Image 1 (cartoon, helix red, strand yellow):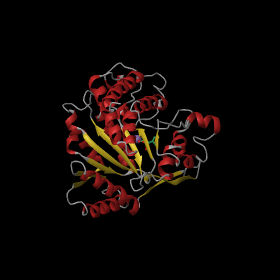
Image 2 (spheres, helix red, strand yellow):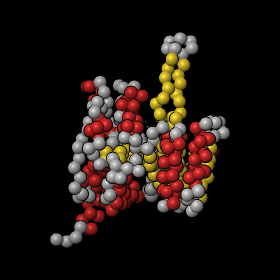
Image 3 (tube, helix red, strand yellow):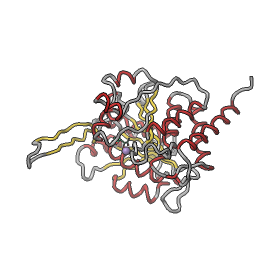
Image 4 (cartoon, protein in one colour):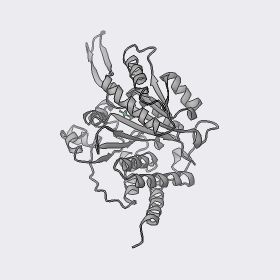
Length: 345
Ligand code: IPM
Ligand code: MN
């Protein structure tokens, strides 16, 4: 359903009247079936020519998951060193949450996910294939440089929000990687005396997300922990269809960013025209911020918020509308707002 939701996000961006030149890169499982690779060999070089990438979900039952994912998104995050994955989690008005008694005011978090190392480093192997002693080894990689930059960025973001930062850790069971993570977190905290910070074991943090989401502002986590927590967060904000993300390298001025909904390719409902485009549209708003078009990004997000509040909505969030109907409604809102702000000739 990647192409379906991205089509709506593109339409909504185009309604803002900016001068954006789009290039379509038809990479993914169809490309794999035709060429034996998810993207061209020089795919990473091709991407460097762009300011931003808006990406739909990739993956299909015809290609093993570890092949399709290491073939595009994980490769892109690592090779372009897009070390921060930002995942805002807000419950928008009009969207049902599975948490009883919770309202939009209770759910406004920003997850800051380390995006290049940890359990996703790709270090390991399978040995003694086919023998009783067959073994799979997956090595978590935690570097000082990698931890420092993500933790520091999370402190910066917390200073610009409500000033509360939570670090997801597991340094009780894991004695090395997360112990180093905690030490560096503590060191970095000294640069940000205005931020209230805490570290919480990731299992307890999962429970707290459900029990008291209002107590969380910015949450920083390793690649795997924040991956898991952000599916839980997505469920709290109405489901996978709502969640947006930005893969960025905040230390590179005007660097390339990759913006994608958090959801997967959902082959079970792909092609039926009823996928929720909200996560993709929200991701496009994050992309506009990144491109320096903050006002347009705000207008797009406002259009999405209006549509969530007043409808139409897709089935996953309690409505009956199609992907396109939701996209059209956002386009309509955005076009009205844009016309109002355009100076008269
Ligand atoms: C995500 C996804 C990816 C991840 C998968 C598709 C490899 O779940 O962006 O959260 O685990 O990072
Ligand atoms: Mn995930």
